[in-house]
Structures are given as C-alpha cells and as structure tokens.
Length: 324
Image (cartoon, rainbow, N blue to C red; front, side, top):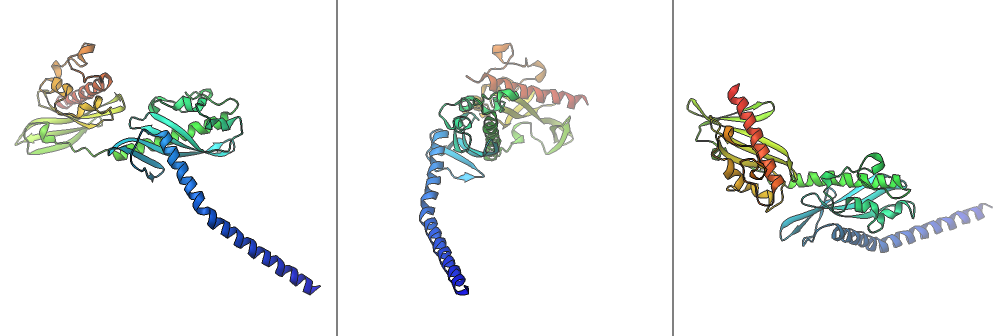
C-alpha cells in the first residue's frame, strides 16, 4: 500500500513537472507574437484616431503625441473606465490640436453581445455623438443623465462607461497640451517707457506692475483675460502710460487657430495696431464690424472679440489703479 501510494505521488509529481514545463514552453513560444499583436493593435488604433502623422508616437502617461513635418497635429489618449456592465472599457481617443475629437477606437470591452458590445461597431450612436465634435463644447454624459451623448439601445451602463472614458481622455489631452506649451517670456521693456524699477502688486486678484523711473511712475503693466476665445482663454499683458494711453500689448497665453486667431501673437497684427497709442477712455470697445473701433483679424472674429475683451479688462483694472 505504501509502495503504491509512493508510486502515485511520484507519477503525479512527474505529470506536474511535465505540465509546468509545457506551459512554460508555450508561454515562451507565444509571448513574442502576443506582444507584437498588442503593439500592432496600438499602431492600428493610432492610425485610426489621429490626423495624418509621420512620427512614431510613444506613450507618455497613456498619451501619444503625433507630429507631421515636426509640427504637432494631434494627441491620442488611452483611457479606461472600470464601470462597464462587464468591467473595463478601454478606448483610444484621438484629438486634433484644437481639441476636436477625430475618432475613437475601442481597445477592450466585454459587454453583452448585441447590446453594449455595439460600441465597437462602426458609426454607432456613441461614436457619432463624439466624432468630429469639439470636446470643450460637449457635456460628456448620456442624454438621460442630462448630457449630449446618445446611448446604445438597452445598454445604458455600457454607454455611461464609454462616455466616462472619453471624458477622462479629454482631461488627459488638456494636461498634455498644456505641458507642451512653450513658456512665454514677456519683455516688459517693450510695453512701457524706460524704467529703472518695477514693483509687483495686485488689485482684485489681477497682477499689476508699476514701472518707476527715478521718482516718477512712467507706466503700468496689467493683465487682461477673456475666456471667450475660439479655443478658450486669451490672456494678455497690456502696458499703459499714466494718462491711460495703451503703450504696448503682449500675448501671454492663447490657444487660437494658427494662421487665423493665432495671428494675435504677431507684433504688427491689426488688433494691436487698432489699440496701441490710443487712450483707453477714447476707445470704442468692440470690433468695427460690430460698431466698435477695433479692426478684426481676418476670418477670426471670435478670437478678435476675446482679444478686445482682454484689453478692455486690463483697462478697467488700470482705472482702479489710478483712482485708488
């Protein structure tokens, strides 16, 4: 009996060793093809969701930056919601540089066939709710929850998770784009007359710099902002002489379309030409086409309005400075 039990144990041990060796061998043989398949799936997803690019995007925190001719053309973001009906829903969401959603690819889902799984179908209602839309203008929840997203029929939980994954991707996109922004260095000497000292201060939370030459104030450098640019925030730094004349304008931050609203950064743009040298009290705040006195950038009315709003905001702060 002991001998028989011992033999059985040895046989079982031998079987375990052989099985383990076989599993290890299969793993070694399949590891590389599986890894290559995953990499190819990522490459295919990037091509599907991004504008045309010529680099080899590499992931940084789940974000891939695409370039063409050295210029950034878009970002793709891997994003996962754990709240699908059957667990994780993983997407690859592509954005152009202005935050428009180029396309979305489903990388992973285990939703119910014929219901939630339809999120992987071409031109499904979830995808069409996002594709080609500016992310900043979307409320990324399903319509029955007060959002802008059409849900898959009889698959609300799956649809909510899909929308959540897109929203998470958009947050990652914004952070990546912000991190890529070149740091703007403002030359204050170009905004106000010659000075030998500049003092920093704040009025109602707005930064105000006072330029002093000898014992006299020769100018002020004041921040002005508008959130109404074509792509959001337009932040300027405006120089004023003590009498309220606008002595210079520099763009501190903007996300406007290159070649259109982005032209506000050019030193001789028509917006600046319409304002620099004018006394703020005599400016008719607004664009000429809308009854004001400021020329607009070509084909960039929204960006131009925001620029004027930002300068006007700086002038309102200037008035507080001289009247305090």
